[in-house]
Image 1 (tube, helix red, strand yellow):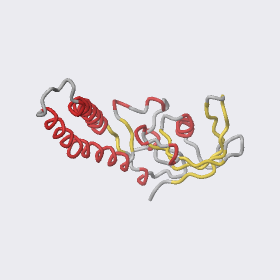
Image 2 (cartoon, helix red, strand yellow; image 1 turned 60 degrees about the horizontal axis):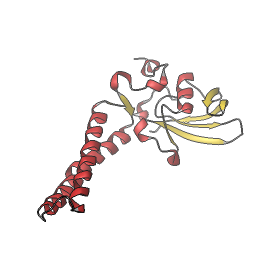
Image 3 (cartoon, helix red, strand yellow; image 1 turned 45 degrees about the vertical axis):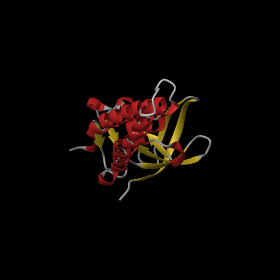
Image 4 (tube, helix red, strand yellow; image 1 turned 90 degrees about the vertical axis):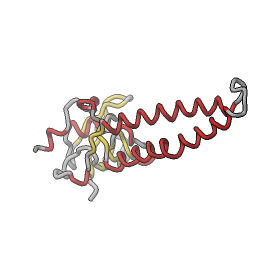
Length: 176
C-alpha cells in the first residue's frame, strides 16, 4: 500500500469516514480517561448523591444538585470519549516507512520568515498541546506540511492569520 494514499489532499477534513487519526499514546490517554470517569469518578459521585438524597429536601441541597450536575457532565464526557475511541484511526508514527517526508506523527523542525526555529509534532485533534509542541493535524502548519509531502530543505507556504508565510523544513523525525 502506498503511504501517499493514507493522507488526503483535503487535510482539514481528516476525519475520513468518521475516523479521527490519533497516535497510540493519544488513544491510550483517552481510554484511560474514560476508564477513570466510569470506574472511579462516577461511582464516587453516585455515592455522594445517594447520601445527599437521604438527607431530605433535595431542592435546597447543594451536594445533591452539584452531584446530579456532575453526573451529567461525566456521562456526557464518557459518551463523547466512547464515540471518539470507536471512530479512532490509530496510526503509529514509528511504523512510517517514508521517513524523509512529512506525514502524521512526524516531528518537524522548521524555520519561519522571521528566522524563528520551531519544532512541532503532528498529532490528532484530541492530542494537540501547543505548550508541549504538539499541533493538531488540522493546524495550518500541519496541513501545509502534509499536503506538500515536505522533505528537508523544502520551503512550504503556510496560510496563517497574518497571511501566507514560507517555512523551511530543517529536520523530520519519527519515533522508533
